[in-house]
Image (tube, rainbow over all chains, first blue to last red; front, side, top):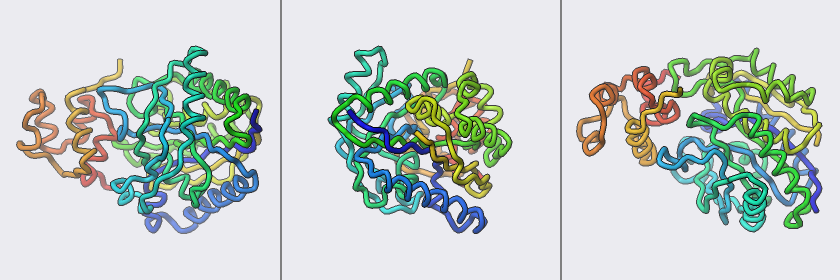
Length: 277
Length: 71
């Protein structure tokens, strides 16, 4: 049995650490303050496992094999790898995984009708490396991952992501392999990456997402279609699937925005939220 | 239906994995890949909008053709 001691949501973008100097200082400092407050609360919660809801950016899963949901059963994550390190300007490091816990999650998921893929090797980009640079700087908390396809459509529905998150939440509470579990989801909020609208940010939509999470009102999020998100939140906005999965893991919880900044230089509507699990 | 070009995404994935960034690709880089004429032209000219319209994944477009993006 485990206690859920913390839950948090954060945007990820390689330029948050890769080019901090190009952002307006006041925006950068407010956003960094959000990450630091998240780190302070997370450390105070003393988790013995970080369960991360994240997504690949096609560095692991190619078009010859694209899982909708994948459990990382790795001994250690490259977070970042030497290649990604240059872009994110974070020293390469290995982050300890939780392969036994993750394998148990995988087996339980398959038994319960959640047909997860799994991977023994994950090269993390900004989805793990950037937020964990702030949140797990010493790398002392093992990390388990649930990867959701948010980048190579067609994508799983938000409703299904929520169901997967709910299952992960139930599993985490019932499994003896960890006693103090923290959930962290990364991605979003609005951003257009590599499309003809690259650089666009939609703060209005970002606030709509944040407001719903603050109220714990996730139903409207679950009804969003790929087309709606693509139009209002961009292809990067599809990553709110990870946020929705986390909200499924902590039913009834309400969020608290720690920071929100639409940072054009980082081409991302950047948010950090604490979720009162 | 979502427009996906497997040939474009296959070559762009290979280049991205090798951390290649280009304004445009060369004939040599296209050799051995099964691409249509429109796909070849878009890659050789670094036409990022056309690549998107042809079904290349935008994350891969940005990774490989990063010099084409003003931000």
